[in-house]
Image (tube, rainbow, N blue to C red; front, top):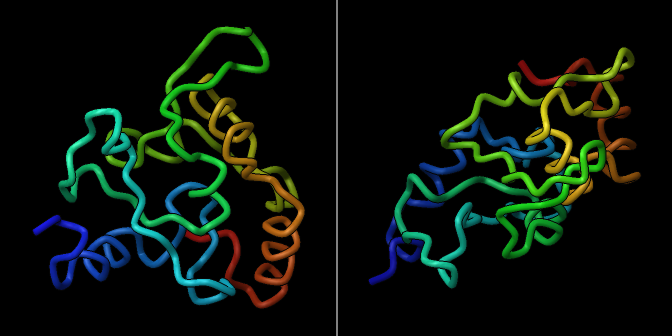
Length: 140
């Protein structure tokens, strides 16, 4: 039986991520859709079906990431791997803008991930604005 079908995996992945999208950091509690359990390294590209290769992801980030593991850095033009929530600390690659509504790439990994997953897409920025008014953005 595939890991993703085993009981409790989805809940463990969501709990580990504190019920946030591990990429754009939006909370699942304020999403219109249930989050996906995303394979960081796609199965079709040899990635394992193990919890260490799974991330909690909103449908937008999951859809824009697709099967990608690499992208071109908009600053240098070089191909760089995407952010991996199991290997990388979010705060090392990303920072919040002064108003905390947009994500800023601090490293090539951060920049390519922002571009590929469109972490500052209009809907996400609007949600962050509303969450900020409620005092629940940015997440800790």
